[in-house]
Image 1 (cartoon, one colour):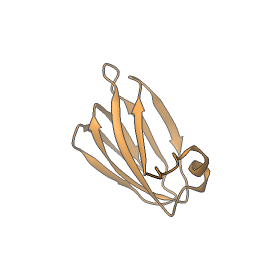
Image 2: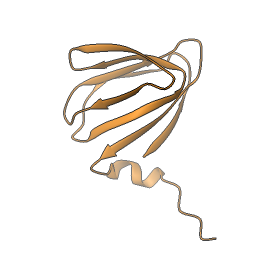
Image 3: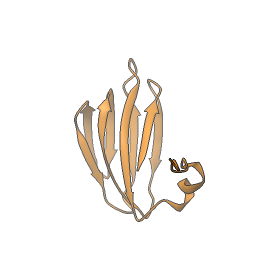
Image 4: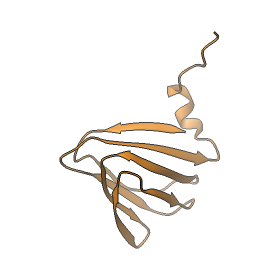
Length: 88
């Protein structure tokens, strides 16, 4: 799971990966392209990107976008960025 705070007008260019990706827009929105489809996303919308499918996100140019993404299987390349659990 990843929580993103994304600056207005950010583009995550077309890419794909072997992980299924799904998530929800908590704030903001933008344009999401998945395969041959394009959607205008807003707060409260959710999405699913199947493994290996090319996708792109362009965030709202006027507002920060906050979203939560889930990947399966785990994104080992993200592990080094993960916060360690509290030991309290």
